[in-house]
Image (tube, rainbow, N blue to C red; front, top):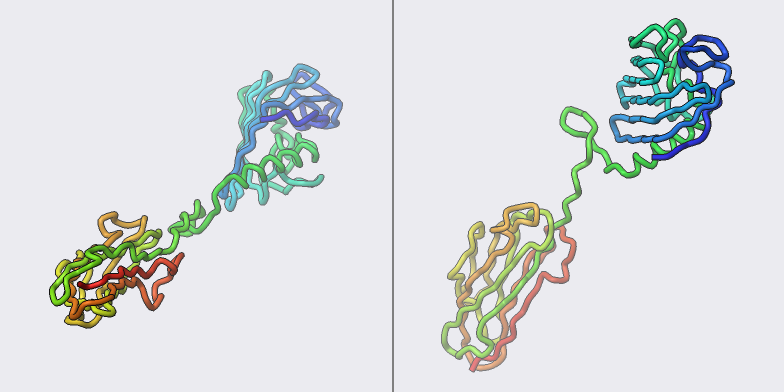
Length: 304
């Protein structure tokens, strides 16, 4: 909130076209009024204004007003020491923050006051809200500056169901499919079966479906079968050839239970010597990811 200067033409608050009357301010700018407690808020659907005024002739009070984006529906209220008043309008643009000397031409709706000496001159139609006409161009410029600052602090907007305007949905980061680990004996016995545990996971935001996981051996080590297949995956291959599994890995926006998949793989070493077991996730890069550098994990072994 802030004080934004002097109003030298806080016009049209009651009293009609006179320099100063007992029922309000003048339209010729002979009074000086201070605005204070200015509060301007706004978003994609509406702008709101609230401030107090205190004039040299003792006239003072509080003003609140609002303008709706799209419909142009406009409301103003004045609670003053000379009475209360409120009015409705339809305006093609926001009258409180319009830049320059000319206000938008509005259509007046209902006007009501608590007494005949209330703050608005009911018999006079200024073709814009009384409280907006009362502000000088400089005052509206400052109002607009505060409005723009308020709008910058709002989230971006997008189309909500039914075509209404609302906050845009936050963007979900892409998937990040990771060959997390290959663990087991690094010195397996030759000419015998050894089991290894391999883990694939999604470290990203979006769910990933039809994720391809391959488990391949090299050197002395060959994959024989998957003895533990995680839920949501199906596997084929083995018997000395590479194993291929396909399934779903959810991201941070999905179920936590499916963010990782653990496979138990039985292998065989047909001879003594070096070999390895390699896990690859999304090897063809068919699924968009934030990082492809973590898609492969290899465990080096030496069969004895």
